[in-house]
Image (cartoon, rainbow, N blue to C red; front, side, top):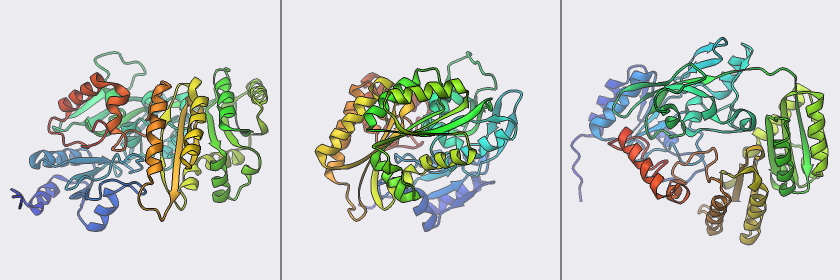
Length: 464
């Protein structure tokens, strides 16, 4: 049956272009293909957007939403498009609204210990700018060199420094958001304490673009710690023993900045990728960092590593050697993904349950004859099991599908969450009722309806 369209695409796009003054509207096939589909993720191949818009300012954002309301078109927010959960892919006939060109550091205030930034500012660029003022921006996702603050806020990104400095939510003081109806609201502020009104700032952190478009963010900055930054590596017989050692370090008073775990398969992949030889040592590697160490803290750390049978412990205060270790951890995913199809998961558990979860993941891999790489932020219980299969196998193997459900169920059984830091997107939105319960699931939909009654903001994501 032929569906009658009241307005042609050309009419809609003409109206859209009139609303976008400072930015750029793209409608060419190559750009739409590139921006509509996440690399290495399998979404709905019919989801080609109608237009991709790089907003230049908040007025452009308002203009896109005005057009979307007028013609009832879905708006998919994007920042640097580093999603791992199909959280920013195009929907067929949608507008993809990118804020990556809104990338100005508006202010760095050492006196107020904060920065005001546009959403497209790269995490690492903000940190670098802050360090020139004797401050630093603490959240350190593995994607620090490429991910934007806006995307970090929209997904509540975690990362390698969460154990000491918290996730993105713990470092946001306020923001500006354009709502679906076109209003731009200011939330939070410049004070470290805020108790007036409902905490709407944190409602938008982690909302994945389903409630509004973030146009400005005020974040905490911290003074660069005194003391000597110390990093190192240690090897354990297996991930379970590593997890037990991490649990002890975590409550020792050492206050590490980083405790990163890599299993033997991940170490081997890194050896191939980097040309290193770490897999010759043992079954699991711990990369650790203390950003303000003293002789006493280093001694406590070394004593605990020895107590939990760590081997080949190597500690360095050399900046070049530390940078190489950090690069090793940041290259973990490219090393695993190289030449293989993959699904990377993102579960987080209570610290006391990390070791049992490590055991369970190993059991699942053995039972289903799957190659599962296990790594993650051991310091905060966040584990990233990654299942891989040959590139030439285009369909996701049934064994992979069969592995995910029991791992998710086990995570919930242990009191954990199936999304620690990578958001929900389309890949996990059907699990809301399972993890949150029916009542909370319904409340989420009520909140969505309040802020976005037409349902145009990032549909099919977060809450399904």
